[in-house]
Image: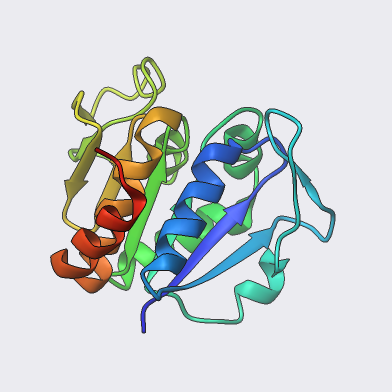
Length: 181
């Protein structure tokens, strides 16, 4: 079974974090939420999230994918954490999936992972990074880097991650159960 890490920083976007965790778990994927410290996380709209463990504990494990929720100041808190930048670089070098939504693709850019790559993000977020091939699609995959636009694309993003990790049939099953149409 694939194993996914979702780091939760203070000020993360709750729709993005919870939607990804929920949909991946519906697909039978093991998801670990990890706080940058041991405190509950107050998300960008004030929702309190309780991570399952600290990032330090999570970093003792191996993961097939990391998913960075966006939001502010959550994205800035991820960028400022040297452990996150190191983990992103290590996972990318190991050929693991490195993914981000909304403003969080800028964390991938700061880590140097989006140079010359196709990516999307919340409008304007990647404008200062000139080597990124910005796209306007809801979800953009370039190899094992996957990015998405924002809160409104969180479900599309999560379903795309399900398809990547466990196949289109499982994605279709989960999507049908969500009654999106």
